[in-house]
Length: 217
Image (cartoon, rainbow, N blue to C red; front, side):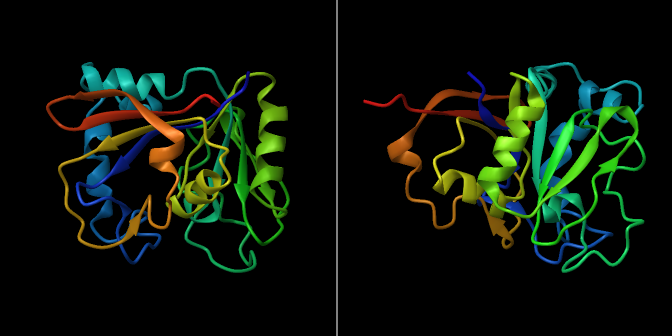
């Protein structure tokens, strides 16, 4: 059975997934990119962006597993880029350059329509304007039996959590303190009721937590 999964989702020690003032220069907000330091050091991350070297320990293994059996991705508008409101510049094609790291169909949830955007390496961005359930249905169909990865940001993940549609979350708790920004679980009251922790393991840099949706009683 296909699943909707959150994988490699980094949080600061005080619970923030991004810092304030997101912009083209600061996609995670001012100072927010520090919660991704653990990933930048891994061989998997470096390979994704054509670099050599990198660590091959626990963090690298978790990051490599984040791509296992993924046939499509879902993103929020902010994860695609800093542009707000109607699309006024079709030249913007995402943060990642001509060859994004997804290599699957990607469904971007937005209020503003835009033509699908094919990129190098098998990634095509599709812009979905009729809600999260429609995005998930389209992603499941495109994934052809594989799982769908929900990439965020936190506003979108919260919507899927409230709707009971997320099957598994892999969270990466860092030692960074951001002090302000966007918290993943703000306003979510069903985590303890609907999920259980099935794995908790720490590397030298971060703690990996896996939450899985409980089976119906």
